[in-house]
Length: 388
Ligand SMILES: *Cc1c(COP(=O)(O)O)cnc(C)c1O
Image 1 (cartoon, rainbow, N blue to C red):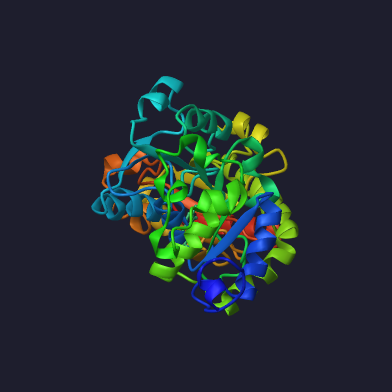
Image 2: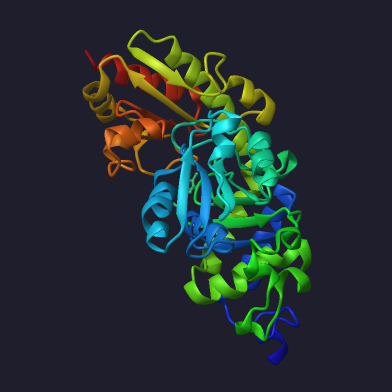
């Protein structure tokens, strides 16, 4: 027991820190991403919080893509600012000059989403990784939407990957959960002054130096488990992790179907007279088409956004008329889900912030499920007929 508490041996002694089911599922996600260490958390929110807070203290700074999930934006822009951590948001399409100008001497990380929820902007991971590494900091990528089936950010230079397993990995809306995976490549000692939490003794563990004891491969996840999970307790229940593990069994089959269905739905919507615009990176009309071809050659995800010619009121009428698609906050699920973010997930944001986050107030987010694609399209067709 003493050795376990001193991190001298690995084993199980209290489920808040680690338990075998969680570790088993984390190891499978780790293998899918091609990482060296991983942990599960009780939500995607806690995964992103831990990933950033593990290397940032009060007084530190993060460069972040502005096209991110609304919950993450609030976490960073409101709650973590209160903790003394500052964020500079840059659009994923910013120039290299703008990106490099966002860094400060106290910058400790760069953060972005492979495919942003819900703006669907595709991040140029290689470009953001280069900027991060030129400034001696890691790139953290939230890879929730493509999943490692469609993109493995480590292959493009990312250092840490996070997930809301709540979405495709679980796949069946059975539980909220998150994951953090480390590529095991970032050299903390090469930038020792920036990352004292990993390169200087942790007095709460008898002076252990994480980057020394656990190396590049294990330091980040061990520290996040030993300190953050110990203190914040955002541990998933083993039962929820078991369900994520079941979801992983069919992830590769479901992702293929989601992408195939979404492509057909996007093409249908784009050709419909009542539809003003469609945003799906699998469409040649998308400004992210080229990036998607590079980073997501086998498909992106099942999520599409679009606007109707009738704007916000038409969107509300349309959504009420749907019979197969359900109105839900949830996304990336086996069932087709639909949401009007300006009325829901993003309602705290001002019009200007909505624009900046790539979520205009007329945007409808459609998360295409794995039902028969003809049923999905028929449903959209009849709902479109109800609007004037
Ligand atoms: C849903 C989501 C989150 C948050 O995950 P929760 O499990 O709901 O806390 C984070 N990032 C992305 C991209 C998401 O879609």
